Image (tube, rainbow, N blue to C red; front, side, top):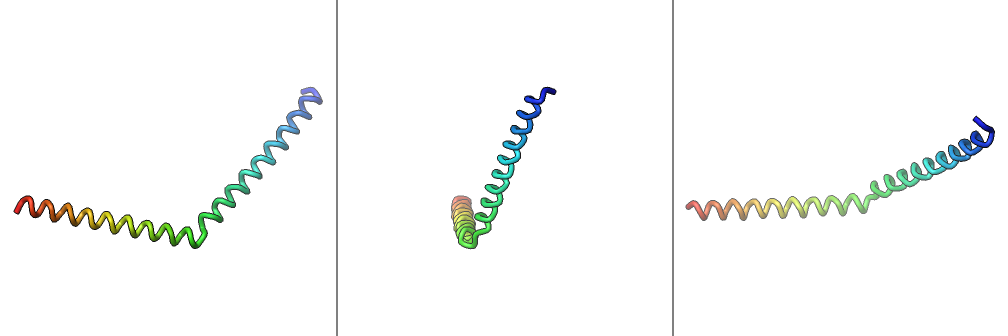
Amino acid sequence: MVVEERSELHDLLIRIDERVKSIQEDIAGINRDRRCHTHTEKIRSLERAVWGTVTVVAGVTARAFYEAFR
């Protein structure tokens, strides 16, 4: 390898290392945001609303079948 090539590869590796560290910091920030208490509470509320809706739809469907076959 020529000295210039080694220098270019060294510079490239430094840039790659900096970029990887930046990505790791971004991921750590995203993970911290996901653990936010308000987001967790909003997700729980949405889950309850969805399961409540599913339960109501299943009940209405069951009653419709019951009335149809009665």
